[in-house]
Length: 408
Image (cartoon, rainbow, N blue to C red; front, side, top):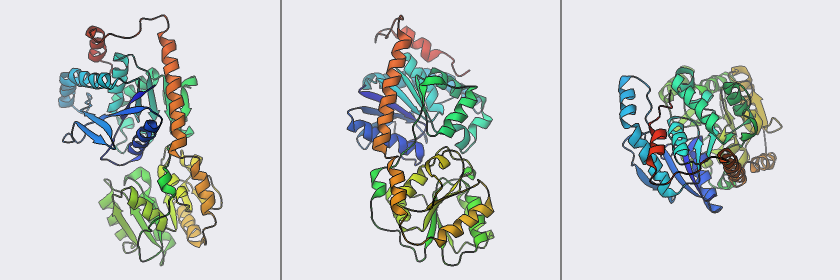
């Protein structure tokens, strides 16, 4: 396998776990001689349809679905054929050997149809879509649930970012997905282990970061911090999202606005600087399929206080430098903050870093390469005894796939 078309639910310039996974996967696959084409939804619509990211081609398509009213439905049925032609054409020109979906959203429907049109193996990596979508789309949309079921059923291999995420998906599907599943955790880059500049702040501080949405648990963190009544240790929160203004105002309501600082959106170098300077990292998520931020804290050699939920408890094992708290438990989180403030010295840093080394991207990409091989083998078995491959001039068969109403 020499070329893989990656279909993430989101990518640059947005920031997040799926974006990080896709970028790291492309970079490390290249080191192994495997090229990547990144195909992503063109949202906002004014983003360029084609650009380069670190040397990789990023193709953006308007991945429309018949959702959210009559206008969306009409737009989908009028445009889906030419969108599919554009996607299939891009994959043909790239000479893709496989299609790999990272996080199921509108991207997955087009990826699944394109893979069928071109007779390519399909790999789907689930990232906690059903529990961590900011709009709870899988609780509201029958269409998205149908798409999720379809792509999981069609996939030749399915990976999950944690055992908890895999269990959730198999429960959703009504039973085990069999031999085609594998847990591949998300990872951390070698740069996260490097020493460097610490974030300048006038006081010692706890650090938390993530998208500012309810399921990340920042309300609980603010209440726990206020309850502990710290005078000499501040709280810094990095990230952006719809709850930014609310959380800032709530800190004022709790009387801790002078000790809680919201840094806003933080790039990679800023995050690493903030981690190096903090007393410890807090991950208070109410739901979390995995939690890359916990790995980054471990790589920086910092104590962790994390919710005992989902994939977090799988990667951040409780011990002398890591404590768990039940999700949403203000009292337990407050006690954890007091424990973190009481820690002295850096003797646990080596243990934390050693734990994070198991999740280096270089190692995890080996699992993906193995998964691609398994997907290709599984796909070949499905094609045994059948007509394989469609010629470039045989448009009628591809049109059947592209014109089919498989969203229903």
